[in-house]
Amino acid sequence: MEPHRPTRNETPLERDDRNFVELLQELRVIQTGVQILFAFLLTLAFTPRFPELDDVQRGTYVITLLLSALTAMLFTAPAVVHRALFRRGAKRRVVEVSAKLAATGLAVLGLALTGAVLLVVDFVLGRGYGVAVGAATLAACAALWIAVPWRVRHTHARANGHTAARQPDAGNRDVP
Image 1 (cartoon, one colour):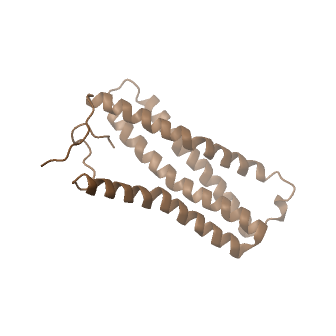
Image 2 (image 1 turned 180 degrees about the horizontal axis):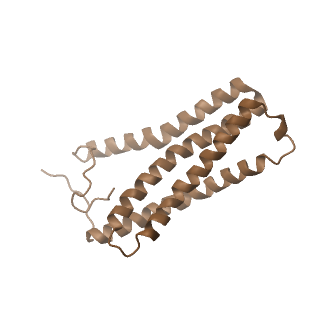
Image 3 (image 1 turned 135 degrees about the vertical axis):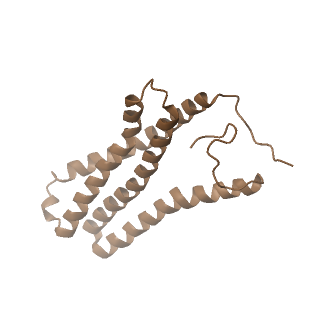
């Protein structure tokens, strides 16, 4: 017997619209943190203690600043893609590309957060602590953003009697 799967009474276009709105809501939540991180990094170079950074810390700073800028670009790109393809009948493609941009943005954000934590802890407590806490930050991002969703997905799939593999356009399921 097929398990009950909730469905929505919506057309594929309505589903694409809903998926895009949900994605933009997710990005709005994340964007504030990215902006704060980026602003912190931009102002850091103008603080009185910045000249005390050694070469490794300066390299970490520059890489982290660039990762933060790239993160902001990746998280704002879906709005740009939508604007460029507005009223061209490409909403499904906009949703697909935007979801990939957001996923890439999360990966880059994890690296930027790791770099920021590494830099600050290295400066305050020393290189060994900085590397250890930076590695722990990266592991926490991986656990919370990869392992937890994977586990929830597979637990949900088993509980509902189906595989966890995504079926992109089966019924009224969310896409992507």
